[in-house]
Length: 415
Image 1 (tube, rainbow, N blue to C red):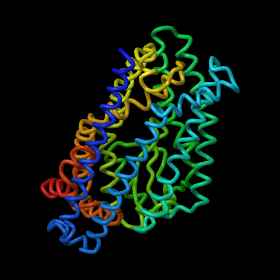
Image 2 (image 1 turned 180 degrees about the vertical axis):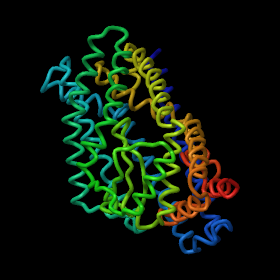
Image 3 (image 1 turned 90 degrees about the vertical axis):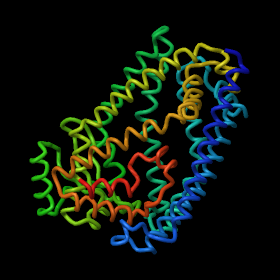
Image 4 (image 1 turned 135 degrees about the vertical axis):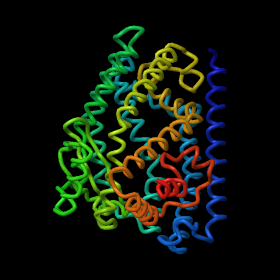
């Protein structure tokens, strides 16, 4: 592989992914704008025209922001590679600590992370304090954002830096098959994190309190008993501290599984609707969707690590992306820049798989709760989260992990 070939392939995929993203973005905006004037008939009883138009305007605002954010992100990638910023960081750090040292690689990641945070900060601030605030969703204060950022940085330093050092050591010390060992360590780490996160890390950012509504708790426990599901408890999270959006989810694995409700969700749904939403989430577990996703992630990541194992030995991989030096850290960084644009055209496959899981979870929910309760809950969530009811079909097919509202509700009505 020559330097020119590496550069050409990278540029081709950058242009391709950007063109697809922009095309789909404009399709979405055009379709939503064209259907802004009337509420779809199947939702007319539960959503007003004003609420429908708010959802349309919210979607259009996110589309406009998405175009700017896409350009901003591409500029950063090009600056790091062909613009020489990554090589400059590497060389400047080499003056303070030998480039051959593994800690040089760890620090390079740290410097890149800080620089990337600063680069993305305008987008983060606009999205949080302008876009989300304009539509009444943001509850995050500047102080909360700052504290969250500092906590995240501290966790990265405490957990991420030692893990990265181990990965770099494996890359250097385990011979030609280092990528197998690295993959195994990362899979083990991710599985451990799924157990540790809900117990030790999530409480650093949010408050979790046991569900106090005894009647609702009794209803949920009865559902869990019918479904043969065990958890470590029912918790309410203070999601309203940061956003008006509502949600419910499972977290953890094995004996550490927890059921978490956003406080915003419990104020919007009836007990029957909460039960139906939870039955849907139980469907994911009963169909072993989480296990399937972990397994697929493991296989895909193994393939990607094999690719990295080969690319890391190719000088053209570095030189063709604007970096003259070679190191384990540079190989990881460049690979992390290349893979998102190269694999982007595969997004519809994962979206299709996810939507299939959602239909299966809906079917499970209908078997253990009332379909009408799940429908009314979904309509409320669409309304309160300002989710568009009229997405562009191709945009939805490409991106959406959940089925479009009309198709999903239609299936539930016919269940």
